[in-house]
Length: 83
Image (cartoon, rainbow, N blue to C red):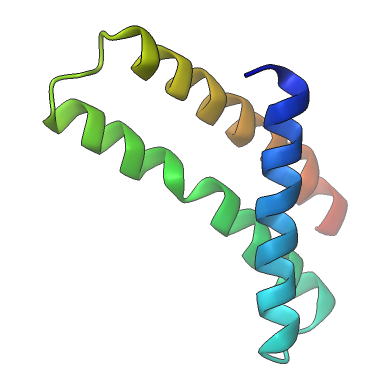
């Protein structure tokens, strides 16, 4: 996956979280924050799973970690936008 695909995944995750927040009656900033949290929550779960299964040194694990790091870095400007 390239950077464009990573950005699309981030936007889709944030959008899904935002939509869920709005459906639950949350304000726009709170819904946006929910979307950002949802887009980042997978990082630690994936890392822990890879470690537990002893797959941290595989090529696919390295690719997944790279994608997750890009998503985490993308969260910084997103947070600056709403806060």
